Amino acid sequence: MNLARIAVKLRPRQAWESIDLGFAMARKWYLSLWLLWLCSALPVMVVLALLPLPLWLAGLLLWWLKPLYEPPLLFWLSRRLFAEDSTIKSVFRGWLRIVLPQLLANLTWRRLNPSRSFVMPVVVLEGLKGRRRSNRIGVLSRGVHAAGWLTLVGLAFEVVLELGFIVLVIGLIPQELMWIDWQSYFIDPDPLTEWVHQGCALLAMSCIAPFYVSGGFALYLNRRSQLEAWDLEIGLRNMAQRHHRIQRLGAASLFVAAVLLVAAVLPQPAEALQLDPQESRQLIDEVLAGEVFGRYREFGYWKPIGDESDEVEHNWLLEWLEQVLGGFTRNIAFYAELVVWLAAGVILAYLLYWFMQNRTLLPGAAKRQHEGNRQIPSQIAGLDLRPETLPADPAAEAASLIEQGDYRGGFGLLYRAALSVLIHDHSIAIAEGATEGECLLSVRGVMPDESMRFFSRLTGVWQQTAYGHIQPAKEEALDLCREWPGYFGVSGEE
Image (cartoon, rainbow, N blue to C red; front, side):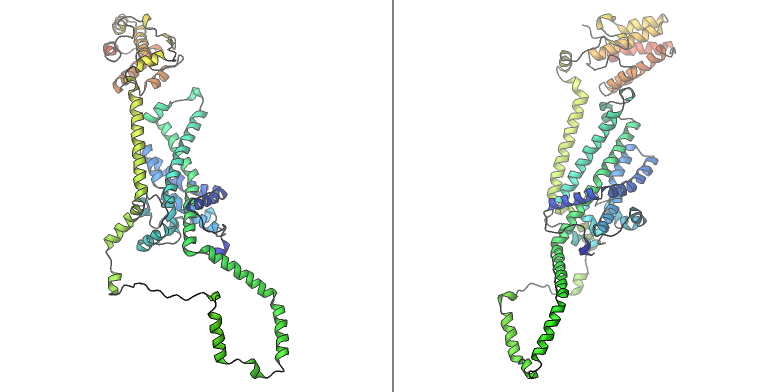
């Protein structure tokens, strides 16, 4: 590692200032870092998509396998920082050599380490493992807590960016082609919606990864600079170079002065040029005694003595436990706070979900919705939904029409009465120009599952009869009439 070729100015920095330096490096070389990450992650996503896995599980595995995609970024960044020519192609030629060391550990007990980007150079760049790795990380991470916050903030930005991409995609879809609403997106997404979600998640992770890896690498460089005094080493080298230049510039004048000095002393006897050894030693002692050369200090320290075999032999189980739990014990305060925030987020999300599912059951909810500014349509798709236009018992009237052979009139009455109950009694907002499919989407997630299945079945039979002129069996039609009051009762007119 040639410190003279480093592309950044090394000086003592605070932890957050070091992360800012890493972000500056990420902005400078962002395109290369982004392509490196995407070229590593995209094939993994394709493989996971081809496997017979649920899409949500494939997305979770894509996120969990981040230790596969991040080491190439760190390797390329370390070479570029020291002005070495390193292309994306050359990095991928050595991809296995970069990623494979300690990959099993990185994907299991070390996966949730909040300081992952900070300690990654110890394995990827220094090649340490076992006790040497643990000791090295212990020294580097002493008093450094910003790495954990870098992980937490990076994860938060990934979530925000992913939601932003989803809103952008859905916002660009014309209303005529919209196949899902927000409630269905979060509660009962279809496969196409899940693909949109996973694609946006991949894009969000790829955008944040260069900043995350560069920020952790800058923290690592700052700690090594502090521990090994890199800034002093570079300063001393610069001083030595300047001194060397001055020596070369003054070589000619020194040579002339030496010649003149020799010419001046040649006539003198040789003995006059020699100093007595005793006098020389006394002169040296007087010079060393001056304040320029500092002071002498003596200090001692305790050194353990004993059998050397005791130092060599060690318990492998204790070493393994130390590797597994070492990072967690050093960040116990961070983990405790993280668990509290995650628990609060889960509770808040559950309460929000419960409220969305049961908001119609709250006291006065239907009344408040009726008295609000919401405009209740009198017609939907040409069907009159006013309660006063419906018979007292729609199911019995529909059964009578079906007995007479008027299937379209019977099912039309049942479907019209069901929509009237939904918008008046259940306060479900349905647009006046909504189609049957849009009515189903509006009802989904609001009604109980059994009622939702019956309404979906009724909608299908109505569409087949009204548009396809396909009549179901008479017994099946009468069954719908008999089951209708159990789900919708009598229409909302008192």
